[in-house]
Image (tube, rainbow, N blue to C red; front, side, top):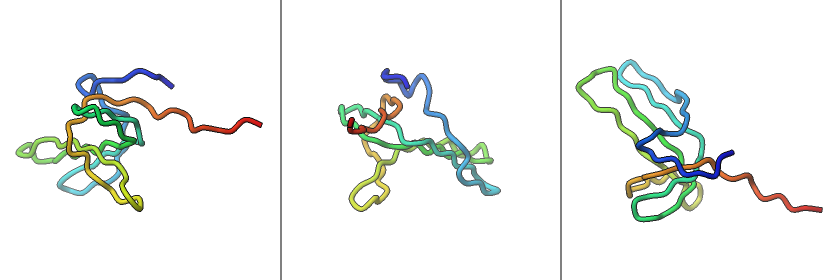
Length: 92
């Protein structure tokens, strides 16, 4: 695991196809740590939508989990991300 921030201009997290229709494809990343332009930090995931029709632009959105696990769109611009750290484990 890397502890370095990666600019979203450089690259996005790895994503897998999560939904496909005849019109569009949706790709989703695993949870990562993100930082916004306003220096907010969230555990979040990225969703990238591509349309088969070149008339529509690719869409990239970031989501986090709010109260009760509800999906919440991050409204501030995400500028960087990094892999989540390992979970804390109490030592015996």
